[in-house]
Amino acid sequence: MEKPPPLKPTPVRIPDELRLWLKHQCIDNRRSLNSEIVVRLEESRRLQQQKEATHSN
Image (cartoon, rainbow, N blue to C red; front, top):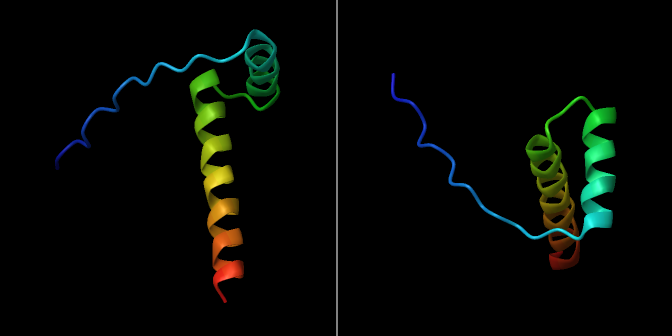
């Protein structure tokens, strides 16, 4: 069974205030900071795709 390719690091500059807020969110949700960011980006993408699908009909 093949392993998936490793994820590439993607450095992102985040303002301190937003980073601190995300840090609190990841603690509350029992996730790593990376996992919290990924979950939030996936949710944002899902909502955007729903919005686009609604407007294309």
